[in-house]
Length: 190
Image (cartoon, rainbow, N blue to C red; front, side, top):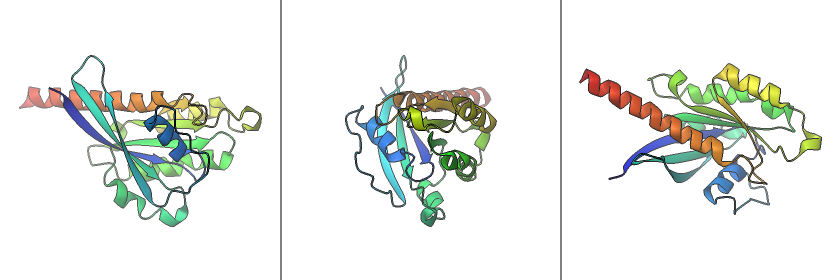
């Protein structure tokens, strides 16, 4: 019997960092790269199930692809409705998108349920590493920011489907681990 664990993941970052492309490539296993830019209006919800190896558990990731436009900032938390994890994305060719990461992560963590934002799994993803000659944010700077924010750091390219799966799988494993530990703790107490 399969144990389904559901998790809300707020995918955030500035406009044009590649959040939607990243999600679409993940959902399609690398077969559906968005060639034309379509601005996300508000939030688009996508769902993907990830089986946790050596268990009977499946994590259903509810991926809230959030618009990076200021116009939608106030409404984003209503769509997320208490997210369980954060997936922050920046474009390695844009220092402005990198500098906005703090604001995005803080915004999501303000809406994590009371159990504590520090226990919420999170990822910082440096996108567009295929644009090597235009890169302006170093891997060292990205890793340092991730550490400061308590996030796992990943780099990749949605376009080339490089490094796309790993952060989503990590978040699923972290969510499974967190809930398993809470259940064990509850069983010991109860």
